[in-house]
Length: 164
Ligand code: FE
Image 1: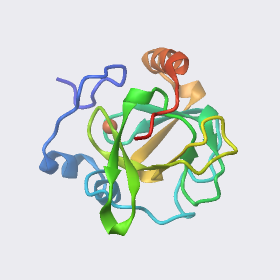
Image 2 (image 1 turned 30 degrees about the vertical axis):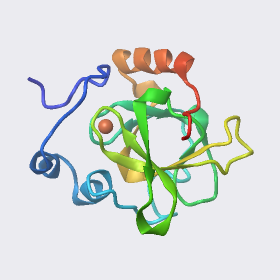
Image 3 (image 1 turned 90 degrees about the horizontal axis):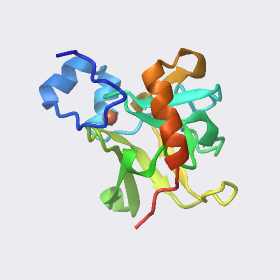
Image 4 (image 1 turned 180 degrees about the vertical axis):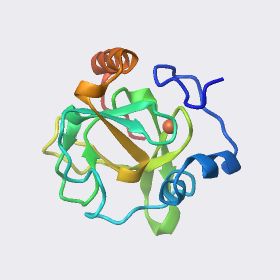
């Protein structure tokens, strides 16, 4: 069995926390597995607008496209749609006395960030506020054939997630 799950597969990725700890850096583990939040503005992809896709840093599922990334000014990478609605899972999150909706990777269950309905300047009105450390950017020119296919398929499915 390969160490890195095939990114074209949508099969669930299930690992123990001990396994995740070995695979991920301490910063990635804190955000992805412990639902932490990285510092705003100083993170890797906030002001990054190259063409390509953003994969889950934990399981390599293609989650977001540079085509739906926008500069929200919030200090974290913002997208107005996921590559396909079902690649991410939305769950009510009432922690810290706030009413928010958590965004997790459907494939591996890792924490990505939160979604807000506060982006009227975008086609969906939604803002996926995602931690850079939860993502891995792959430039368009470096996408494998499998990833290209996955990205193209997702493009046609791409739709705003329904917020509950
Ligand atoms: Fe994942």
